[in-house]
Length: 118
Image (cartoon, rainbow, N blue to C red; front, top):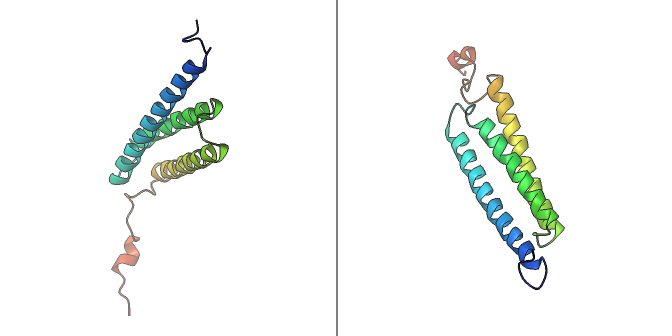
């Protein structure tokens, strides 16, 4: 049943508004997880949550693009590129945490730390 006499236009506008709100909220949640991951030495607990949130953000971006909620394709392209870069960073963090090369490792190998510089 149409919302008004203009067909589905008001409903489409409502969907765009709702998706925009979801997108902003998702971006905020993602940012908060990034801040939490950066603040901890042991990121392994946060990173899987961040991965999920990034995937949800990608879906929101694609839905917004499908509904033409972006001003133009370049706005979508910029946003999705940044989210993909963040996803790559998160995957790098996950690999380093799983391989014991995260921030918990010593800054300098033990043998080098005791050597004096002439």
